[in-house]
Image (cartoon, rainbow, N blue to C red; front, side):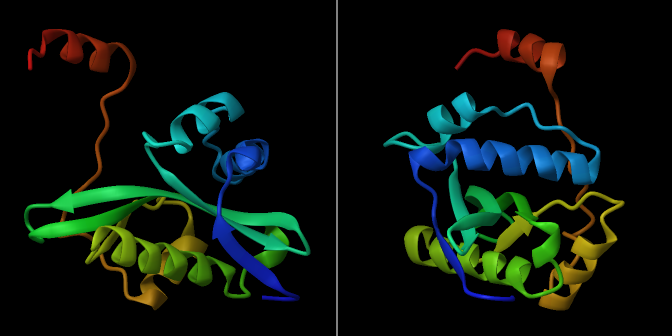
Length: 163
């Protein structure tokens, strides 16, 4: 990393910067986010926060972030952490910031939740990210393939459920 870079937990007043970095990540991946500054503020902070975020700053300017949350695996027999998003500014890439952000997530999750693993998904066309993850020791997850149910399909299924 060039210059001095700090990694710290996000604060509610970071919501605009997080939203902007999500937009930039979406542009990089051709996968625009639906999350907004308002949803980030509502869902990412307070006693019922649904996720945690770390911000990387260089000279007081946001240059990267991670968004993650607790995960549990019955096959691994314990808690872990799921990394939903990680992004670094183009000028920071290839200098160790991505690895530093991943290490910070792992350390916090191990300390705060007793996490014993870090899980993530990678866009198939993001070769740089795949190289980083491989270099750090990540491997395909036992043949698992992420799937999602969204929109009307999710609403219909949720409407059928009774708990």
